[in-house]
Length: 263
Length: 263
DNA sequence: CAGTGGTCTAGACCACATG
DNA sequence: ATGTGGTCTAGACCACTGG
Image 1 (cartoon, rainbow over the protein chains, first blue to last red):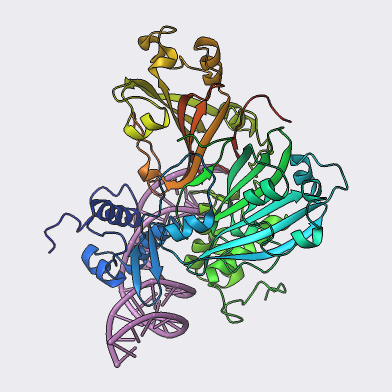
Image 2 (image 1 turned 45 degrees about the vertical axis):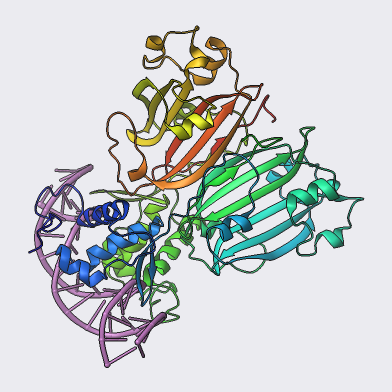
């Protein structure tokens, strides 16, 4: 009935699953501009009729796209093409998550989750070259875009960095270290010269935040960036872990460098 | 019938979808050691009986786990717990993908996909501080673990780096630049002092490899690491893009730094 | 061959958002 | 009230693997 070739696909070349074929068709239409960003896709039932497949198949395709953040589903409303929230690629320069999120047109809210002064676990101690028994401040923060968790971070600042400059009581106050780089440089006299780190994929279930429980799907994919910041004397000053909740937002993550901006 | 509490779950607290509850049960059993790594899970039909849910629900849970690499499905054989292929976290130091993969007990095969000398696209040219019209060599390589694509990389070496040291014809030969860091240092006199880069999630469909088509699911999640290596004079020497095919293997990705190894 | 996972369907009901 | 997506089922058939 439809003159387009999109019709009876399951009979020819059964090479790939129907759901994948449907996903591919939708991806084509997205990249070709037939379905522009922010626009609403046809409803599931409409696709069922157009493509002559079952609703389960359509849903499988849509789920795959939603898992990769290509598409955003809204219960009772419809399925929408995600905006291309990919910032240009500065490759260096320090980035401020607040700026990044609001720059994408989202309402950004950052939230202090917890602060504590204690001896960090061994792996962190080693990364920071701390002796056994050394204390540090651990600060958890969260960044929400339109009230959805997109990023949460852990900062670990060894006691030696702030001792004599600011009291432990004061540093534990929410927001006391904001913005972090300025705090380290101006209040502690410790500029960050360069970072060294690792990246890994994980799932939300394995993220153990100190503080209120995160209200996210345990299977949500998370990009974990772990890094140590060094001062110009090559002494480790700060340990950071950034958790980027992947299927909510899609954007480049910046790894910084040392010294001045390059471009 | 089953004395365990795992039975009728769908009637109590309908808070989360059945499939998620099933996934959670399986994750518990994995982390508790009930299902040790490498072991085979009960078949789908067995789970259907044990948990009193439909096969579609069981499969939804298993698909979610497989998408995150927690579990590996083998058609006609069964579903297996993935080995924890996560290397210890060196945080710096250059890493050799061959070593990494074989170190996990996989048979590693690296494959030269293509080489070409041409003017790189503008974004790459800018990253490398190249004037319009400047030439560079682009090299695509793939790393396979047990014949499955796990990593593919693009290296772009500007002509000025190798000119006068090695002919273009020679550098285009497969394997001519192996190992890369040694090649740059010994053959070109360009040691890499530090890297600057970005990370982003993507899907395989958006990866445009020059050379043979990749035989992977277009929706497969990919971790893209884009970086520029600088020499001690802070001049960009090499542009690299690494594509880590996420649901095949799971491991930390190392970002290097500058100068000597720290730990 | 038997058992496993892979695919697909039809149909039911629920939960949410909007008018 | 309507239409949307969210969940779940039962059952069918296919494709692969291994003994």
